Each structure stands twice: as structure tokens, then as C-alpha cells.
Length: 97
Image (cartoon, rainbow, N blue to C red; front, side, top):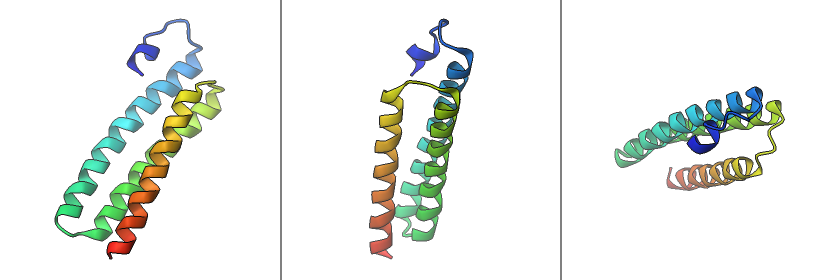
């Protein structure tokens, strides 16, 4: 993503959306780390909270990409996979509670 962000020929709206996505992925990564910590202390409700926060961040990225008119199908596919994996983590967490 950093390589694409450095591309000065990108439409400013797309560049801003990708920058937003980079921030959102950084936040989501930290939230998933927090969910792992919560899981290790058997705090299932907190796992749910942190994974949902990560999902919200990636949905925000998705919204900005679509709003900007970005044709970046790779990023949209990565968002879809991220959301799929988070949904699976939530389902597993629910089974464990």
C-alpha cells in the first residue's frame, strides 16, 4: 500500500482513501492484538468488542474506497478477506462462550 500511496499520479480522492485505509488497517491490527490479549485472559466479551472494532475500521476503509471511485479491486478483495476472517473469529468466540 505504501508503494501506491507514493504514486503522485493518483487522483487526490483515491490517494486520500488509500491513506485512510492505511490508518484503518493500522488501527485494526492493534485492535486484533488487543483481542488476542483478551482471549489469553479468557475475557470473551472483550474479544467480541475488539474484533468488532477492527471490523468497523475496515468497513470505514471500504466506504472511503467506494466513495472515492477507486478501481482498486485488490484492496477491496483484501477487505473482504479481512472481514471474512473476523466473522470467523467472532463465530469461534461465540462457540467458546
